[in-house]
Image (cartoon, rainbow, N blue to C red):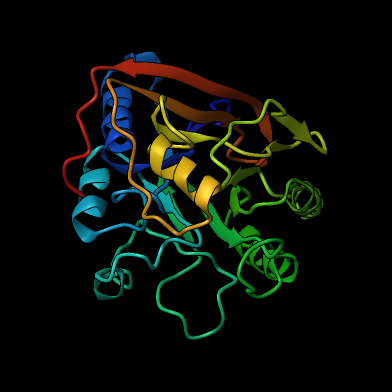
Length: 277
């Protein structure tokens, strides 16, 4: 990136990637972007990227090779056993910052983007989720720290409750966050906006994976769990068509303000089946 002060940073964020169909769809999307539409920085939530639950080191390297600059996660980040072998050295990977002190990995990082720096924070909600530390106080401390280094601060809040997402977004907007993206529910919301004249926001970015599915998972096993109440194993849905749910934002690298935000929804045909993790 050049040092042009008038050029905004184009940020592309992919909603939760589910299994190999999601990985293949993201790869195809990035490879086929026209040159004049390519982003400056790519973020993806990857907590469901390996057969629907967690992230293997193999898939971390695979996603990295697609041009993804930062990977956020959520409550399923620990579901693959080898995560503990590589998370401390995985430069691009974040786990939620508000896990208790001493948990492996990091919850925020500052990334180089040409002549600029981008701070990314990953947080986990507490409503209808396993109890973790207070995301509000931790967000307040971390945003202040990052803004001493760069005005560009992006938050991925992996949470269940819409009200919790909206409230934390407004709280982070008051602190000067550039972009606040909700994840976890896998259903893209139609409420993208700019808060406080400077913070891009969406309640949920959605998911990348098989369209003919239940939020990326196979219909019959999902149905059985609802009908029988028995914890049957979820399987990633197979199919010929995948969806891309993403968000694109333009951020002024000098002020940190978002000037534009839009949802992305598109379908991709002839995806490969999820035969391996």
